[in-house]
Image 1 (cartoon, rainbow, N blue to C red):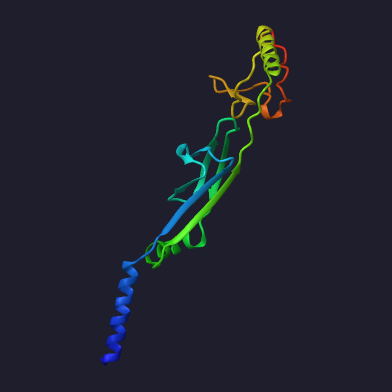
Image 2: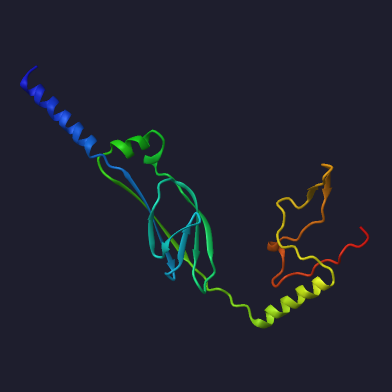
Length: 185
């Protein structure tokens, strides 16, 4: 081996060792801002702070982001963090372990919060009186609808059709009039 080849081999060895010693990593960070600022932020039911806030995350995927602030409607939204191309399987090994520099993946999320609607006392009393009158007449007000309200399985494992349930999203503003109770069953 000549001296020039030996120098090149040593240079290559030192370069590879330095590259491995100074491997970078991927830093994932989300920045959450609201208008107006000052909302408490929960990510997957874990409080991370008050907006504007930044937090690190480890995995990509879908997260529930919930914002709460006095005087404003709460916001709950599912947000999907999609993996960039360098985080796909096989490529992620190189970007996480062998790439000599740090890679920063920053996601900015902006939310606009709406002021909470204050229900006038007259409207609230009117709705309460309607509910009271319905209860005294024997009507039942559905609170939660089952996942499949059309079929009920009896103890004898025979499906029984149930009457249709009005879902909250189909109701008119301010409530609804309940049907009369079914007698004789």
